[in-house]
Length: 218
Image 1 (cartoon, helix red, strand yellow):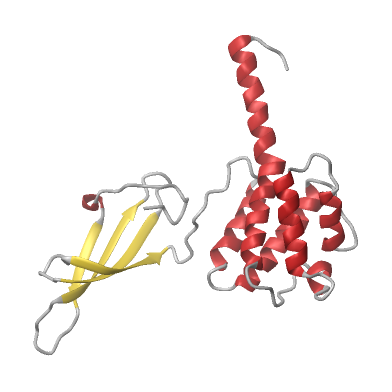
Image 2: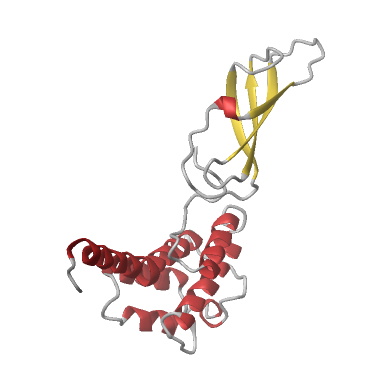
């Protein structure tokens, strides 16, 4: 399974989980189904995980077959791990936008738009009248990867800034969004993180390793 706290794949043995099994009440006291609460700590991040399972074949201690597996804690799991090279303030906002997407895509898209402008202003020093113009300015950069340019173009078309000017002028306001906009924004931010933070740091470390191993200066 993937840890819902840190996004790392873990392979806990069931013996490492604490289990409590309860029968579903039945007027004939024929307890053929039940609920089971299982819990453990992630071996990587050491955070607590709780699941509620339902199944059949209750025998007093366990269930023979599990037909439903529900994560109880953490309430908002993460599915991806942001690179360690991304500054915490940006990674935390992206994590929050990811966690709320399943409940409120509007809130997720709002957080992502705010995050996008935050990165454009603070890291790339791109600051225009509105988000639409800032995205256009980013697209003009010669060094920007073609995949990121494509994603930016898709987002601009989908957001339809002309018909919905508030999306461009007030990135912190919760408004109606188009279908799939929240997911595109999350992917866009991951591509932007890769372009601004991850690739440069990986290249820096690569050159450093080459220098240490072979004595070749950049």
